[in-house]
Structures are given as structure tokens and as C-alpha cells.
Length: 133
Length: 475
Image (cartoon, rainbow over all chains, first blue to last red; front, side, top):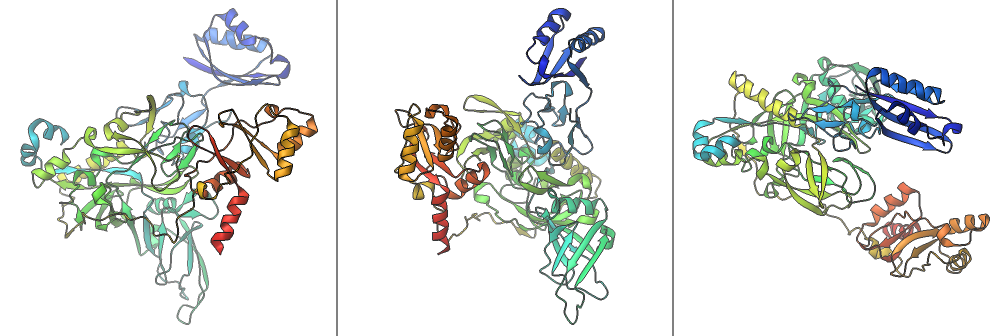
């Protein structure tokens, strides 16, 4: 299962090649979903697709290297009871996390979501909710 | 039906099929409900009335009011409006009613506050001036910023396409000659049975944009098919489900009801151009729109339907079941809908001026490699605030304002290339001045360079030019 982790870089860690060294040490594929990182520090949202023990090892490695780590469990929700399946959200979604199925139901695949939030206010019946991270 | 007509032709289809049911579930802003509150004691002749802070129209008799779907809440803005009030009435929720009046001998009361549910209302009748557009144009945006329209959020540079209407399921599109749909036709509306009582406003049958006026008992409706909605940064509306049965009386109706999505076309319009007649980007079929991707300028563009195709199908199915169980009887129209109406534009006392009518053509420009000092001199001599920066072909590369110059002098910057703004908000010559006024306000700027499609500088339009124009209009 893909797990999403938010890495918080403090100012003094911002210029170290931490992500590269974690990948080299663990040999785990890490996908960057969203990054907002400058000389003053910032955040990187990553997706780790690996067996559980390897994910745990990766997370603890980041911690050892002085990075704040927060696992993102469920950040966006589609309220199926409220949704009217109009699909207003699907053409706005940059990653295809929101799509229409063959029978024109709206489907949310959380793994693909990068939390850009564009869909949330576009929903005419407020069926999409985002947990801020 | 489409398959039967395709495989066996309309003659056989007309013999075999009795009724085709249709459905649509989309935002229908031209909807609203007539409510009657009953008389208070002492009685009041309502002059103004609000339901959950959404104003309803009460310019009729004492305690009648019309709550329009697109009316905004006075306290919650775009998050709540008439459409939401209508949904809440259907759900049986308590609604706060507040009314004021001037007081008469027969209606002495001047104000009232109470809460009601649908059970307290004598009548609650959904009564809609324009529903169920036969088809509708699809939308995209050529501009370089996201725009928020009644067709939803449109991403810049043809980033997405939105459309409305259910295509092959569209009620009026299945009987475009209105042989079975007319005044008195019984329909599915909001989960109950209602009627068509007239042609809809803006009914334009010659262009394939027919509409209907509809009526139904709000108290009997189902919130699954009556939903208040917020269209981002545009307004509020009502998603409403409508279904119409089409009896297949002859081969002609079999043929029109047998037209598939691949043969129903509409245009994708460019909403990046804020005019009444928006440019057509391309023609498209409902089959392409429903596939989720359409091609624009060689790129695959994602599509949003806006109206729910799934729920439209559900409505057609529910209607079919009602008919099969004998709960819904088909009715013959007492009058046919007109087939020759045109939708005329508004009569205006004068045309809105375009940018080219009021822009300044003699524009002083500078090159990016010029000095800050020379630019300061130009602006001071001519009394301008904006200095467009162009290349050797007169193409716009940036802009420098008198404020930029002041800052540059303060910081000791020498060249214009160090201080110019390269991401410039521009206007085109054939744009209405009202749209430029909106750009100035939105970006908090005081002027825009006017450029052609190749970015060549044609002139400048400033807030000063616009103020002069308003002075002229008032006179």
C-alpha cells in the first residue's frame, strides 16, 4: 500500500541532500507529490510504495536526519451521500484522482491526490472535504 | 431506442416501442417556488420577506411570495441561497421567516418573525420559468487566468471543458418538433409528477435551444432530485431533476428519439471572451463530451459534465417504472410549443464602447535596455504613469510604472530590464470597456496596454480614460 508522508524541513536542513541519501540507503521508491521548499525550509509531500517494514525504516531514517515527519492518513473525503455525481470536479483534478467511472459515478482515488484543493470549492454541494495538513 | 432504430430502422421501432422516457439533472437557475404563508393576526401585507435571510419576491397579494433559486443569502453570501431554501423546504426543515410591511387599515401589522416547515405552508409550488434546455453550448477558456462562470470553473489556456445537458437522454431533444411535448404535458419533476405549462423563457426552437416552463408540488418532491448548489465565485442555483415521457406515435418521432449521442452536436464556446456572442472554438458531439476528453488545438482536454448523467439515467428509469406500474399516465398536450420563436438580444440605448473607441493610440514606449533615468524623464515630461516596454518589432515585453521608477531610483537600479514587470495584464482592441474595468479592479492596477493577437502594442487604456467615459455616459 502506498503511504503518504509529509516531511518538514527546518531552515538548517533545507540545503542538505536528505531525500537523496534516504533513497540511497533504503532503496525504496519515493514519489514527490507536492513540494514547497526554499532556503528557509519548507515541506515535501511524498508517497512511499513499499512493504510496511521498509516504510517504517524510511520514516525513522528521515527522523534521524532531523526532518519532521507526519504521516497523512486520510486527507480528502468524498461524501457519497451528498455527491450528486455532476462531475464538476473531474476536469479540474490535475492528477486524475477524481474521475468518472463507466456508469458516470464520481470516483476518488486517494493515492493519486496531491491536495491541490482546487476541487473542494468547485463542488456545488460541498461533498468534497479536505483535512489541512 | 437508439440501438433499435439503428438496427431495425424507425418504421419497425415505431411499431415496437410505445414510450421512450428521458431525464436530466442539472443546475436550473431559472427556478423558484410560490409559497403561501397564511394570514397572521393581526394580518400583515408583506412588503419584503426573507426566508433564512434569502429575500423572496412579495410584490403580489399579502402573504404570497416567490423564492428564486439564484437569490443570495444576505448573511452567508454564495454558500446559501434560494436553491438551498427550496431544498430545505423539501427536506421538511424549519425555515426562519421574517417580513416587513408599511401597514394599512386592513393589514395593520408592520413586521413579523416566525419559523415554518412545509406543513405550515398552504401552498409550496415549484414554478419555473425556464427548465430543461434542449441542448446547451459547452465551455472552455482561452485566457491566461482561471475564470469562474455559470459553466463552472474554467482553467486557463483551454485547460478544461464543461458542458451541460444529458444529450441522448435530453427530454426536448428526443422530440425536437414538439409533437408530444406541449402545454399540459405531465412530467417527472423533482421526484413527483408535475406539468409543462408554457414554452420556457428564451425558448429558441429554430436554433435547437427549446425550453419549457414547469410546475409541480414542492411538498411532494424528493430531495434526491431537488438540491441547492453553489457555483464557485458565480452564485447559487438549484439542481433539479426533470423527466419527460415521449410516446412514439409515428416514425418521425421514432427517428428523432433514435438519434444517438454521436449525432447530437453542440459548440464549445470560448468563455475567455466576455461578450454575448462568444467565439466558437469547435463543434463537438455529446458522445465526445461524455467520453471525458475532447481535443482542442491538438491537446487532449479533460471534460466535466456539470449535470449528472448518472442521475439523468436514474430519472428516466424511475419514470419508466411509474408508467409500467400505471402510476403515471401519459397526457396529450392541449397546445403545442411554438416552433418559430427567436431569442432576441436586449435592446440597448447605445452600444457598449470597445477598447478601440477610447484607448490612447499615441503611446510613448521604451526598450528594456534603456536607462531608468531616461524613462523617468519621459514619464515626467508627458505626465504618463505607464511606460510599455517593447522590442524591435513593437511587441510588448513588459511595463514600467512611475511607482516602479520611484522604487528603482530609491534602490539605485539603473536599467529598465531590472525593474520591468514582464507578466502584464493586457486588453485587446475589440474588448468591451466594461471587461477592462473588471480587469483593473481585479488586479488592482490603473492601466493596461492594448495588444493584438501577435502581442504588438496598439495603445494604452487607463482608469482615467474609463472615468472620462463614465462622465460622458452620465451626461
